[in-house]
Every structure is written in structure tokens, then in C-alpha cells.
Picture (cartoon, rainbow, N blue to C red):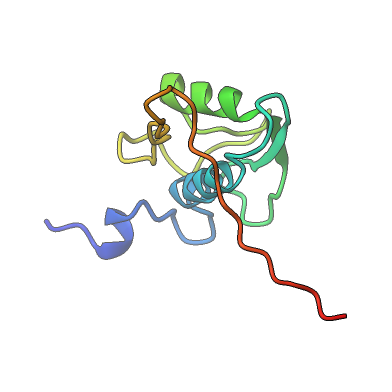
Length: 116
């Protein structure tokens, strides 16, 4: 039997939120917060199955990276449950690109001049 498209992308049962979707959201947050100080906490979302859960899991980017890489589990607040068992298809933290000096490259941000 062939899997449906929804099953292939980690969709949750009807009425539940997909933990795979929430991991993708958290990976996006991780990417967008890459330039923060390593000790600055970031509010990542609970990856549970409850469609109306927006509980925050406060952790630094290095803590998030370690949890994702070592955990083999979904990140949920106490008492919440994922939409299904953990899968190896869950998004992983990409390796940080570094310069030849071992530092992250500077991020250049273009700004607009303000009208006087």
C-alpha cells in the first residue's frame, strides 16, 4: 500500500497538529535567531499534538541544537504529547558554516536611508 502525501510529510491524525510541522517551525526560528548571543534564550514552540498549544520552550540556540541532535525525541512541555513517534525524517540542525578562521561569517544587513 502506498502512503498518502499527508502521511509522507508527517501529518498528524485529524484534529491534531503535526509534531513534524512544529519541528520545521522551530528549525526556522533557530535559523532566524542564529545571530543572537549564545546565552540569549529563544522561545521555541512546544511540538505537541494540541492544535491550540503555543507554549514556549525557552532555551539558548546551543541548548536547542544539543536537544535536537542528541534527543531522538520531540520537544514538548511537561504533560504534552507529540502527534506520533519520533522519526528520523525530523529536521536536523544544519552544520554552521564557518570561515577559514573558524568563526561564523559576518551577516551584512542592508538598511534604507531615512527621508529627512
